[in-house]
Image (tube, rainbow, N blue to C red):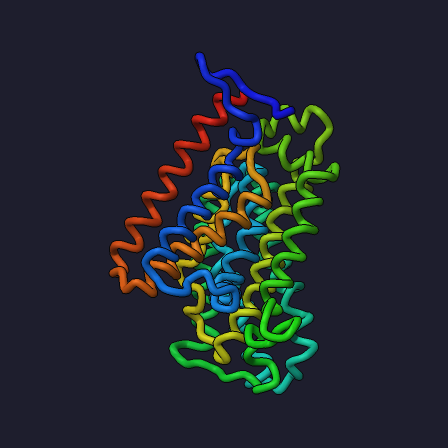
Length: 324
């Protein structure tokens, strides 16, 4: 028997009064509208292939979910991606370091860069918005110092990971990796003590501290996680593109934050789910792909994405009130 919530003289099923249900409904609508205007848009092979283009955003959105639920923000995630990519390419192409061990070194470098953000925020008490705004410029600047305006090519065996599939022509490797990681991190956020600490911090950091939550350690951990996932996204991006440049993923942090907030996370912390972020990522992918194939101008695409975000946030807040 479905649980319902009273809203005046009407009732709303509890499952409908969740941000994830709103995002899922918008995803269905976006698929239907795109299919109506674009023939064969719902072809499974086509959708799976296009999904590979959004896996970098998806991986960074998983880390950003933890950061935002904890009551912080990470504007440097795309710059970490760029710096990790340029560092790996420079060590390989200019210093002759074998690429294979560098691939496994990338997450460690991402952890260090994310850890710097976390240490400054946790130990110096500075706002994460200010800290990551500074490191966004710093890390991007360092990436430009390494490569300048030049680009570096990568070995052929490393390129084209998005074209490697599982089960014949279906399930591109980046998509499988992203979904598997989303399941694992969803369990961490929603089923572990660490996840409970993250939610407690985002709801009220001071109360969490007095309740015994290691606030500083959790803060550092979520930024390290964001850095590691940004580094993984870097490896996928440079493999997909086959070259490395300092301006890779420029501005992509806005798409990452949009995906997390569109998925129902509160920008003030204390609310959010991995499921919502995943659904929002696919919603953005469907929306942008459908408008691109339909030759919608870029400015109209940006307008539609912004309007969708505002509508989703407003609807999420309304239903959140009904749940109280």
